[in-house]
Image (cartoon, rainbow, N blue to C red; front, side, top):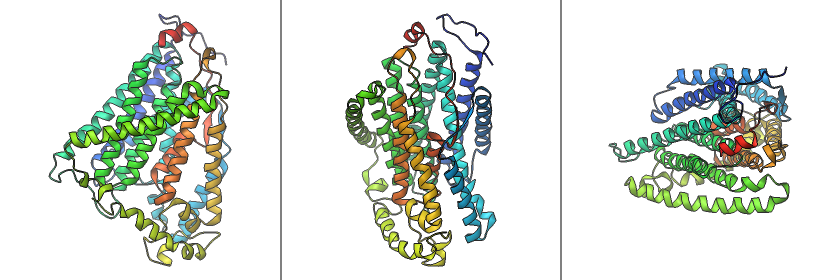
Length: 461
């Protein structure tokens, strides 16, 4: 159905009321999800707090999905079938092997690490980000409003993290807040990774409609994203999570690399130049993060021995050694049921909790070769599609960041899955969240949005 003519703004570009609604709904969705995450980070032992915010964010996200479905056709990605088959196989094996259907909640929809819940949350966050960026690209006025809203959100998030660290610094614990040795430190660390992933993907998406970036807003978004990632890494160390610290810093580096490579990556023959710029940007980001991190520790008067990576907390550096020791159980666990797997293999063989701490090994021991092949097919297909995704023509034949955006998403997905393979469980929330965020199995076709006119693009920049 042809779209009715939209009113015209002062710059001469269309201003679509529906874009304003999508912009507001995208902001509301992300704010509600951020409130839920922040509540559980600030009070990790208080149960599932702010469930109202979580439900509200999901409802707004569902509304955005329905609104997008009205405008665009649904597209089923190639990895949808193996992913859905794996999820079904995962649930079936759990019911058969564990024999406690009530415990399904703990591994599927629980806020502490539900596979299905965090996959859905990633999809909803991705839809909200795309709604923000897509609505902002409808006119110069909307572009300025969207970038301003995004910078405001990043500023509030960075400020909240810094305030939380300052409060923690003045607490009786003296800056030490490792929860316990039973893994409860993982939840706040995981949610910190989710926050950094959303900030990074949103910043990259907002650089897409700005065909000619103005230096101040572009650099503001990048710097704020780096600040959030660095704050999350330090914050995670107080909780005792090395995984969260590494993931947050890694996402920050991929963000800078994508921004550095973006202007030339759109030209197919400039691959080497783009990779060089991305590498230089990565080295710069690593050096900057290290320098600012040391400055932050000095500013907050936090001694190095209060960080988990330097010896404090449940396991410290030895947590890596303990994971390697658990890999010695792999041959026995895998031999128990190599094809079908056994979700209770540790309890049935070497003792509860002695399972292989690594997603790849757990896939083989808990879901068998069948589950390993299904999961691997889904993730590899998603990463390959992201790297080879068809690039929509940039407005006015100007270089866009869209190809770098695809590389950024693929790199983040591969890095998070790879990190999960080094030392965590199949139900690691960030892995499922990033999969839904960067490569949802079911998505929508490219939107038929009204592009900026050349004059409008100049005004927006």
